[in-house]
Image 1 (cartoon, rainbow, N blue to C red):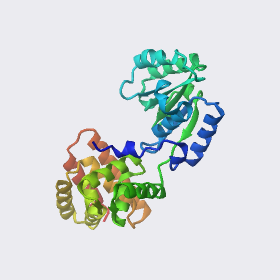
Image 2: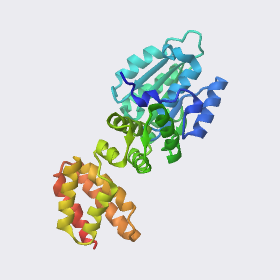
Image 3: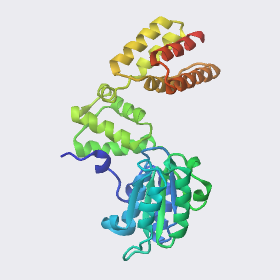
Length: 314
């Protein structure tokens, strides 16, 4: 069975981790010195937080790191019981032949307030035998007592050159051909998320070893930027009916949801060559309509409302 690429191409050493050079340098120095504090990795999805935690575990404990390493996802069980039972039971037992064990708690910002309070007490009690590595998307959702006990590392989305390096590796090992327009589309659609990038690339490769822009957008079920721009341009020129019909056609063609459309429209608005004041107004309109969609309003009615707001700007 073919291996999933997000695991196949996951970095296994500090040197293989891309895009977080300063963080990797500091964490590697801590590991080599044996002076590892509790750590909090914060940043968007798919930028290397979980990967770096696994690299730390391998560097400390070798390939048999699972004996002294516990990995949990807080979004699976965000209540206090996972802290009192699973984490506490693992933390209170000292590791064999190692100075301390490591507990990696992914998506820690999903923990309830009560669970975070229990986690704080556990971190205090077992600090001599266990180190905690927490990861989250939003550090603001982590309680201050936990923040004060951790060294905070803020991860950034990867840059285009890092994706290009990864793509060259995958192309060589998988025998792919990727044209320049497809490369741009892959980077644009991934939004700095390496997991998403690799998943899209693997899905495309299962269809055709020669990857084109059309194939990428077909696999992702997203509208091409030029299609969205055409809808916006029609609306801004006062052609509400034409923009509405084109939007409906585009949504049906690609199977887009209202939220998908709003996000693509908002992205294209930012790239329009129009006055900044008008651009701010259009972005504000997008935000208002997205809120209505989240609240459960009819998708097409609200998208038509957005196009009507755009037409008023002409």
